[in-house]
Image 1: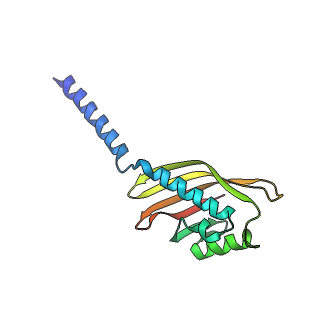
Image 2: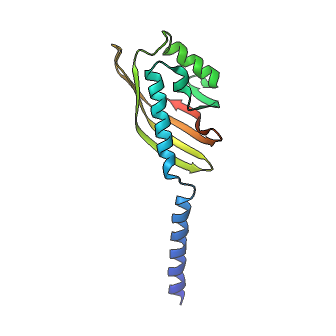
Image 3: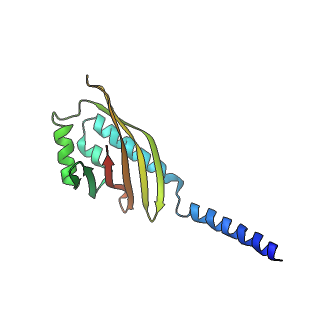
Length: 146
């Protein structure tokens, strides 16, 4: 009898773990976020800074070497560094994107960005983005790119 109870206990704990792991997981979240990142890269490549920044929430923080800046600081930084002549000299693409839904309408997204072309050496780095489901859809609330 004790063995049966133990087996039942193990089965129930395993089942609860599976249900908990699936809780709040929307298979379309990754697709929505990847599409938003592609639209952002498309905006960059078209020279449209506002389209590039469209996935960011107005409350977003962007991590810099001297600490986080808000949306306005982030926009000014991109305009000065990459859009100085109205459009960036290099094309942007994202790859190795991994979306992990954390629950509560929050997702952790990691990946790599690559800048190429424009007669300059290729540049690349990694990013970590925190996305939040808002009434306006999924939006970036934190960006740490290096």
